[in-house]
Length: 241
Image 1 (cartoon, rainbow, N blue to C red):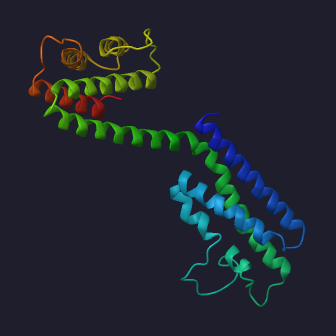
Image 2 (image 1 turned 90 degrees about the horizontal axis):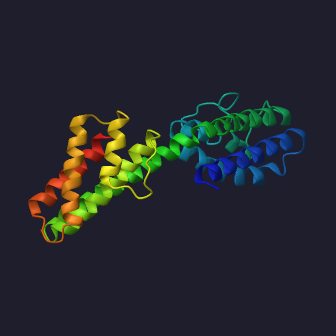
Image 3 (image 1 turned 180 degrees about the vertical axis):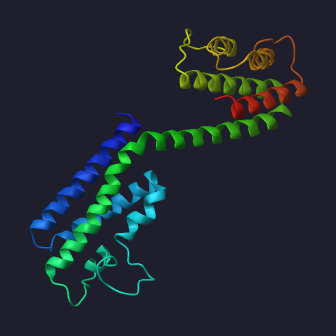
């Protein structure tokens, strides 16, 4: 099961649990609702915060008492009031239950809508983590270049290959080789129109520098060549997607 599938399954189970709890509450006494809801809310509020930060405050507002509230009644009564045993003097049990269910169903509606966001949220998280990893590798390579230009260049070569493979995947470009080199990735990207001739030439130059660092053992790469490869890798990962 993939990460997306696992999150989608957990969200579906959380929604089903909530709707079952709401259905039971609407038909029976409220004595078992408090514990069941608190357990559900603890899980649901985390899901809302992770998948829909823009609706997180709204989701919580159906449970949490507004500290600026000036009156207690329809529109201001929330689930936390019910948990504390508070209700307007003019309300009976059915009024209280109705308002609690309204708040709860609103939360469930928000939660149910989050399934459509799973793919985009995970993609954004993966992209952010990938970018952080690349930035970290650039810093390490810059430090390595002072000690071993060859090691720094080899690291950047792996990073460039990984990034070009990611670009190819994003554009649904099939690469024949199982473990393609920079050149193996560069050509199909140009043929598909993902990169132009100028970028293709720049990547080809970077591939030559990478080969110098990784394969030509009889010639030592200079610090300047390693730094040029690092700068090229940084430009590539920040501009070609």
